[in-house]
Length: 123
Ligand SMILES: [Zn+2]
Image 1 (cartoon, rainbow, N blue to C red):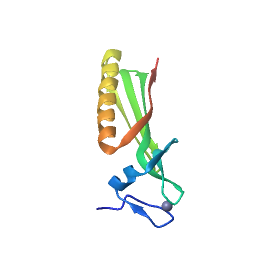
Image 2: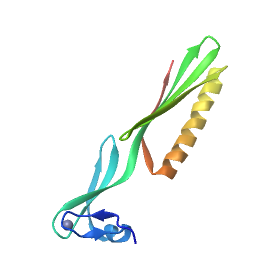
Image 3: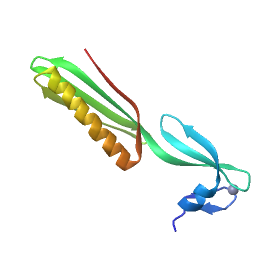
Image 4: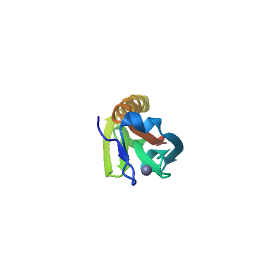
């Protein structure tokens, strides 16, 4: 059984024995969500349970119609990916965003990523 977390006192925990420890809470910042538990030695120890990512979508007008711009990234490691696609009508652009949002959410779930700030902007 793999080691999931080692405390400074030397005790080590598998996923199963980790969840037997008393829960001390959760810690959330822009980078990750962590779970805190009490080790019998008295220390509070944390493990990352999800990486947090930001995804934004925007619609911009262009001479040929509308452009959907998607940006996604994580803070640590700093990693950003994006794309821009052209659509002839605003309705198609909005449809593309709905589709991208669904597929981003699905991919995030499979990867253990939590989407923090998922917003659409545009005029
Ligand atoms: Zn300990």
